[in-house]
Image (cartoon, rainbow, N blue to C red; front, side, top):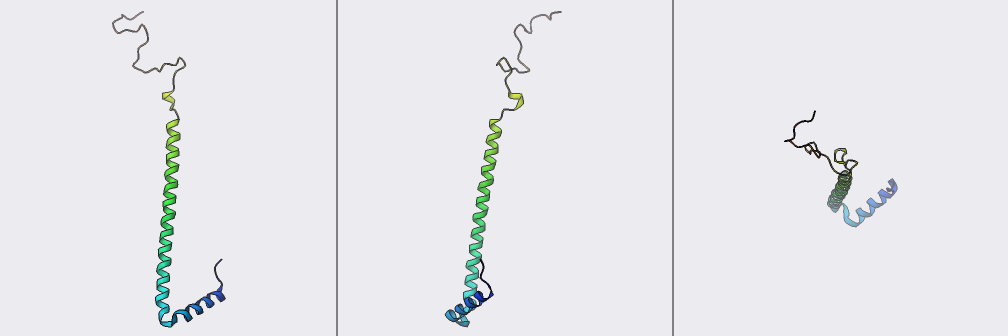
Amino acid sequence: MFPGGGELVLVFLVVLLLFGGKELPRVARTLGNWSATLRRSLNEVRREFNRISIQEEMEEAAKELRERKPPHAQQPSDGEPRSAGKMRQGDNEGDPPSG
């Protein structure tokens, strides 16, 4: 994937012939700056993809949690929800206690 030693020497000689010895440091600096800018941009894109992926996973998990019914919210077998404060039929506060 990466060029070997002989290939690098050949590229260096071609660049030296094209730009000359005096311009070589400026060309190397420019290429280094471009490389750093490209690397920063690619890292930023990678971070953005990771952020979006994590956000989608969190949204899926939240959706699954909303779709689940907690145990205390399940309906009783007669289909009518019961709460602690609800009185049954015939239980009036004014009625004397039976017994």
